[in-house]
Image 1 (cartoon, rainbow, N blue to C red):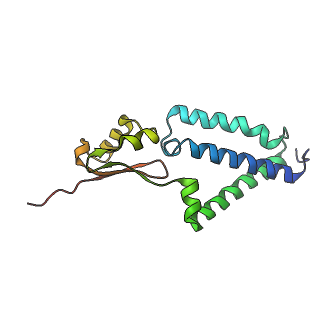
Image 2 (cartoon, one colour):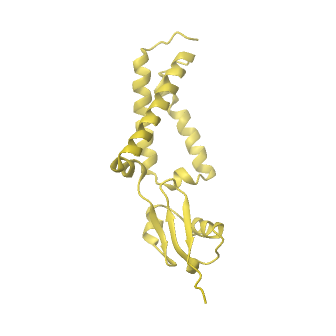
Image 3 (cartoon, rainbow, N blue to C red):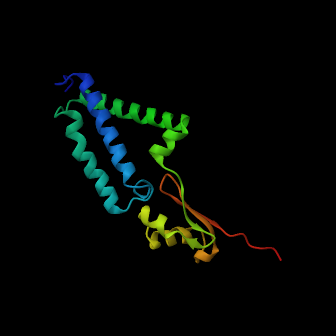
Length: 158
């Protein structure tokens, strides 16, 4: 239960390698994957976690190996969070930039396509903001966390 079969540092190294690999591959899949999980996206994340388990623990299912891996992954996540907080370039590289999807009622189809956002998803965000027509949207922004924020055009005072 407690006697690990590999040196402790190998678990740390394996955990960091897998963490880095998943961070890069998930970042390349786009912002929508993080912020707006469809059922198949959730299934993919669950399958990914199962797929990388053995690459991290080297077949060692002891409690001690699990503790080392959990500590490593939490530390790596904390360090990445600190780096992106302290360094704007790292934040842009790791998290991306917000993207404008709609400006003054005009949809940027190129951004929708590059971020793999459907018209249906865009309209759902517009409706969630209490609007029913894109003409009423001043700006809709895809944030780095995958959320779409919609700002309505101002109502002119008579």
